[in-house]
Structure formats: C-alpha cells, structure tokens
Image (spheres, rainbow, N blue to C red):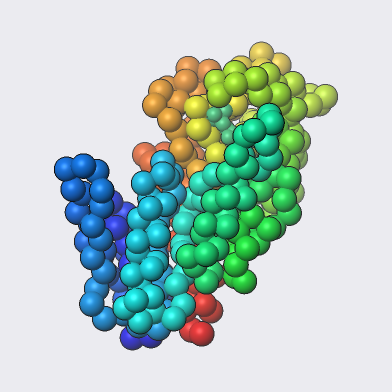
Length: 295
Ligand code: R5P
C-alpha cells in the first residue's frame, strides 16, 4: 500500500465513493470532541508514503483546525506527500478587501493550506479576480477541476435545446463550459450585491420567452441570486427555469426560497452532500488524484 485516503466520520460515504473510484485503501480518522469544544484526532498508526486527506470545506471553520491537526500528524507518522481533496473549497469568494480593513480571506486561507499540504484538489473553486487555484493556494499541484461539463451533460438528458443562463459575470466560464459539448445557447446576467441576502440582477438583452432556461452557477448559498434571476426570467416569459449548480451549500431556507421563486428542478453535484445531488464528482476527482497517488 503506497497510498491511503483518510476521512472523517461525517464524510464516510463520499470518501468511500472516491476510494472506490481510485481503487485505493481508505481509513477513518477518529475524532473526539472535548466538553470545551477542543478536538482530539487519532490517525492510523502506520501510514504509507502518500496520504490523501478527504475533507469538504462547507461550514469550514472547525474543519480548518482539523486539517492542521491531521496533516501535521500524518507527516509525524511517516507520510511524505500529504494531499488535500476538498470537493468544496471555502473562503474563495473574499478575494479582495472590498472595504478598507477587511481580511482578504482567500489569500490567508490559501497560504494556510499551502503550508499544510503538498497538493490540493478541488472542484469549481470561486476564482474571480485570480486566474488559477495556484495563485490562491500556492502549492505545486493546485488542481481546480470543473464539474460544469458534467452538469451540461446532465442537462442534455433532461431538457431539449435549453438556454443556459449564468446569474452574474463570474459564472460566465462555468456556463460556457457547460454549454460547449452540446452547443447550447448561453448568456449571463449582470448582478450587483448589496448584502448577504440582497442582490440586484439584470437579464441580458435577449429573448427568453418560451425557452427552457437552466441557471448554471458554482454555488447556491442563501439562494437569493437564483431566486431573483428566476423571477426575472419567468416575468420575461421563460417556459421553465431549472438550476444546475456545482455546490449545493444551501443555507437554511435557501432551497424553499428558490422553489418559491419558481425554480422547477434543482440539480447539484455531490461535491457537497445534499438531497438535490444528481451528478457525482468522484470519477472526475479520481482521474486527477490517481497520478498524484502513483508518485
Ligand atoms: C457568487 O458570485 C457565486 O457565484 C454565487 O452566485 C453566489 O455565491 C450565490 O450566493 P447566494 O445564493 O447567497 O445568492
């Protein structure tokens, strides 16, 4: 055994799916929470040269501490290469100080992870003002995979001649990539965010009347972006509006909000476990991970 995939108890199912796709060994990390909230982790006693740590980073704060404890311990137990697989990468949206004094979380968390890991693999990280994941997380192998083509394939099986719509300019790359293989029409809205739950959206100047529109985005969090875009699309005569999203973060009440706005179907990838999961990212991640495991 030259590599092993380690995971936490709350992610046993997606970790097992990935291990099966890679054909690699898988072991749990024991986790004890002390009454004061501190954590004690216990890794397997013997570790191979390559250790893959599987940890999705939705609701990330405590998980970032787990990563520090686990990565350091893995090295103490003999690992020479420690790889992080985080299907959802947190803190990527705060990529500049929007107001003087704000922490640029993307850069800070990126450096933190780069100090812990030799390689990082994630899916559709929210890279807006930086081009590559390596700029945000400066490790040699910083791999940003995209589930957008998989979402495009899924949509192709569900809707005939859909119009793929990105809710904001940042979504342009995912929308174009989801549309590419099938030659779907696609466009993006423009969006101004006034607060966590307050967004203003303008539709692109094109006819949407009678079209089956599928909103494509990397993340749905509060659901307000999707809800506002949906209301505008339906008011403009769209025949239906569905949502295809990589990361179903869906904060409390968000799914109900998008449904009330008129979204018919919600399809997400399992990069974050959610009842709307329709597309698996395990084969995509396995393809990127296998060469690292073979080193
Ligand atoms: C931001 O630009 C992202 O691509 C999403 O559009 C955004 O995070 C969605 O947030 P919410 O669901 O809270 O509107």
